[in-house]
Amino acid sequence: MPEMDTTQGPQSPDPMRNFQFRLEIPGVARGHFTEVSGLGVRVHPIRYREGGIGQIVRTMPGPVDYAEVTLRYGLIRDAELWTWMQATIQGRVERRNVSVMMLDSDGTTEALRWNLFNAWPCEWQGAPLDALGRDVAVELLRLSFDQLERV
Image (cartoon, rainbow, N blue to C red; front, side, top):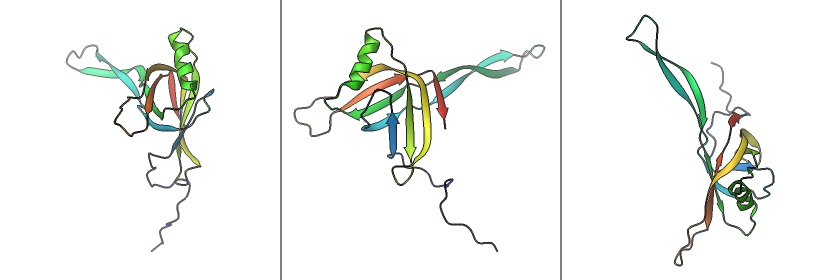
């Protein structure tokens, strides 16, 4: 009976940890994001009746819709993300290619990457303030984008 290879190689079947990730946004030096959510794509089905067979409804792929991605990050004095949002508010949409990288168990090696092409901020929410709270102030920035690629 052949022995099973128990070493973990680059294609390890173990699931990745969701807390080891990094973001790259051109023009934004900070990298302290606490959460990335909403990565997704949907192809809307188009329904049609096939000629001659009135009772059968078939489907075919329709428009592609990319979900908006939400970034959460600890509030700091640096205003790079707010400046990017402010440009959109003023009608100067600055599209940037954003990358979300999952990291290997060592926390430094890139294992997986999603590229969001032509991303721009479409929503910002300030951190809730509470005079009795002790939590870190966390802001939210939501991005809209044209295309998603998994590398």
